Image 1 (cartoon, rainbow, N blue to C red):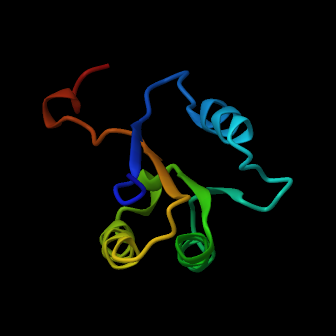
Image 2: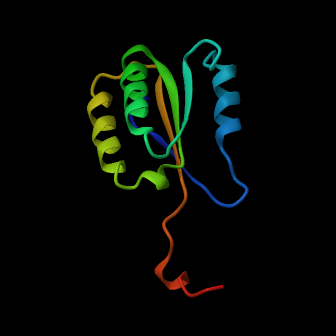
Length: 111
């Protein structure tokens, strides 16, 4: 289904980006044909990310939003946007999200 996003939990040494890019290429979706966009999230990337999600939901395409753990205050807004665009998203729309897991309270004092 094109409606739920794919969510990757990141751990040291793990980067799902090449896997997503290769799969997209196999299916004819790439940076070269402007149907794939990879956005490394950080300060100032909220508006570009939202614009790409809206465009690809309408026209079809894949967006990868990396390191969303750096944008925890923005994640509820992204969640709402994905709910809205899912209502009539293009059949070729996919959203991939990566984030590190939240720190465990019991591990705060571990070296």
